[in-house]
Image (cartoon, rainbow, N blue to C red; front, top):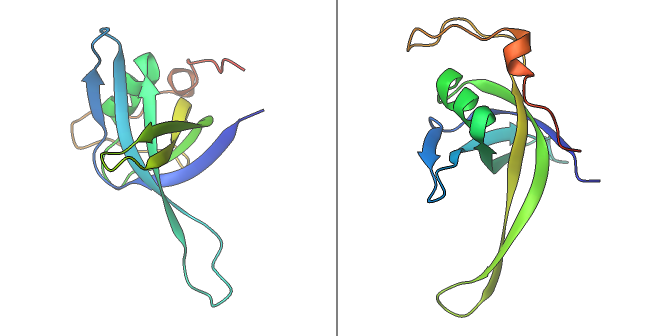
Length: 126
């Protein structure tokens, strides 16, 4: 089963968009630290994420660059052929749930953090 839980920080503000089908989605990237390597250096993964519908709107409304977030979802691959004819694979996180890992105060836009009920209103499909 492909279930992923990851903590990280937004590397830029999330973007809420509407697809050709009219479906809303939010694209963003988070930076997530791993354990230090054998030489004691910090290792950071940059994870491209997509959240749809209510979850995407929630993320776009309450988060901005630098905010911490905890995500639950699944990793998905997207295989394609680039302009040079090379086969490529992109990996990204399809987000099902989002949480404030340590809570959050008022955002710059004046929105206050949602209640726990709002944070967990989107149910996992698995």
